[in-house]
Image (tube, rainbow, N blue to C red):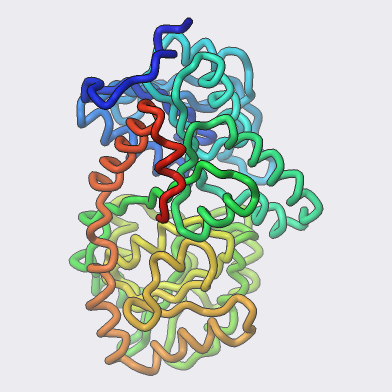
Length: 390
C-alpha cells in the first residue's frame, strides 16, 4: 500500500503536503488560475508543502511554489488556454510527491486524471467546482452536449471524497445532477487591492465628463458573458460605459458597443484604480458559479447590478449593496441601472454598504476554511459534513 493511503486522524500534524492539480494555470489569466495562486500562497505561508501540477507551457516556479508541467493542447477559441493531457505522468508526479491530500481545481480533463490517481493511491481528494461547463456549452451553441457534460462531471466528481462549490446555487445544481458529497466553499477577496481608497479622480476625468455616472464591466470578453446586453445602457442620459478586460469576443463587442470605452486588460494597481473609480458595476453573465469580479467591486465600495442567477445571488443583497435583475426580463437590467443612475442618494447608500458585505471573506479566512475541508477528507468525515445545510 502507498504510504499516503493511511487515513489521517484529527491528531495529524498541522503541516500538510498538498498536491494541487490545476486544469488551467499561469500564464493563463482566469478565475481558476487566480484561485489556485491564492490557495498555494496561503498554504506555503502557513508552513504547508505544495506542489502544483498544471498544463504546459509555463514557468516551473510561480510565487515560490513548484509547478510540474504536463503535455497539453491549445484550446482553439482561447489562445492563452491550454488543456493538459491526462497521461500516466500525472499519477507518477502525485505518487512521487507523497501528498496528504490532492486538490483538483475545476477538474475536467487533467483534474480528472488527478482524481483517479488519488483514488488509485488511496490519497484523500477534494474537487473544486469552478466552471459551469454545461452553461458554457449552451452559450457557444452546443446545447446538445449539456447532458453528456453533466454525466461526465457527475462521474468525475464521484472520484473525489468531497466537492467544494463556490455558491449556494452551484451546490444545489451539483446535487440536482447527482453529485452528492458537496459543501460550499466561497472565494476570498483581496481587501487591500480592492478598496475605496483606490478611487482615482484623474482616471475618472479621462473617462467621464463632470456630473456623468461611470458604469463599468470588468472581466473576460467572451460570448458566455452576454455583454451585448450592455448596449441599451449607452442610450441612458448622463452615463459613460467602460469595459475592462480582453478576450476572443473583443472585436465583435467593439463593433456592437460603439460609444463604450474599451480599456483592455488591466492588472495590479491599474485594475484596482479602474474598479474603485466606477460608480456602478454591471455584470451580464448568467452562468457564473461565483463571480469574483462582482465581489471585488463590492470590496472597492461600488454598487453592483447582476443577474438573479448562480453565484451573484450569494453576493448581492438586493436593495442593500446593489440590484439583482431577472434574466427572463428584457428590461430588468436597464431598469435597475437606470434607477441607480437617477438616484445619487440611493447609489451613495449602496456604495457605503457594499464593502462591509464582503470584507470578512479575506483569502486568509476562506483558505483557513479550506484546510478544514482537507482535514475532513483526511479523517473520513467529509461525507457526513457535506450533508449538513450550507
